[in-house]
Length: 336
Ligand code: SF4
Ligand SMILES: [Zn+2]
Image (cartoon, rainbow, N blue to C red; front, side, top):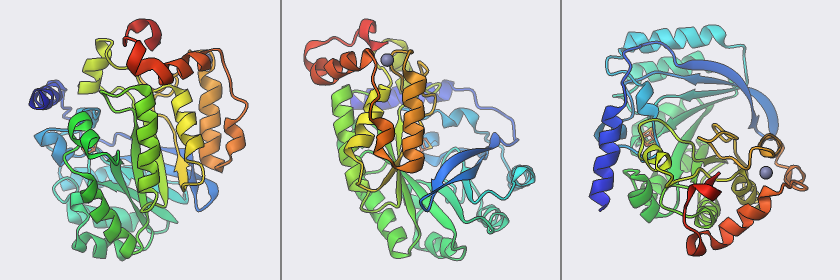
């Protein structure tokens, strides 16, 4: 059964169109939190040859593969960086995203990693993402040389069963712990992503697992980003969603997790596609208001933004959390 699911993930990914474009996917400015302050951050999304794991198999929710290109050269990557740099206005925080792992030399050659980090050495902080297997001793030494780099690790869940059977993550919790501990020992700050509502899980189970996962990851992390599921193209999650067998989490669930983990560390959440059918959403009437409160909470870490929020749909959400796995069929009627 599990191997059939993995086969389906791989097949859907292959159906995804790989683009032959070699340009930068995007660069923009957005607000974020840095050292207790709300600052402008500069986001760069590099087009690379893609995540090593996605080439072999891939995670059940990840559609980044759709934006990769097999023929990307060092020169293409350097051109993308030059283009991004031309749009940089000295923001204190720089976030560099690839479609996989910045620290994987096969995806971003070591020379390019160095050039990129040197280009942004004046920023107060630069965040790069990586799978844990690329956080080795050499990379730690390399990153220490810059002094402003934070590494973001996508743990998603602190439950190995979820990593194996629901996400097909390709690593286990202990691999995250090893990488995070190495980074902690080298005083390189860690950011951890926790996924809210992997597939094959009820709304209530998803809330509980996200809370536990955040509590676990907070031991190793300066900041945790709670990422509610969003439906990306050519993924297993899209396959389930299009058949009415999966609904992204409610924004009320995001609020619930943030409230329950308040004080467990710096927890932020900026729901991708929030308020739309493909992202975390409520009834449609309260989504903007609740999303705004989630953003304000993330920026200021102040619980008062989450209080006094209400809507008729909150009672329905409460019943789904309480009875969903026992008394309700996952039918379109209440999936909203
Ligand atoms: S979620 Fe990360 S590790 Fe998983 S396939 Fe996507 S880029 Fe690779
Ligand atoms: Zn509502």
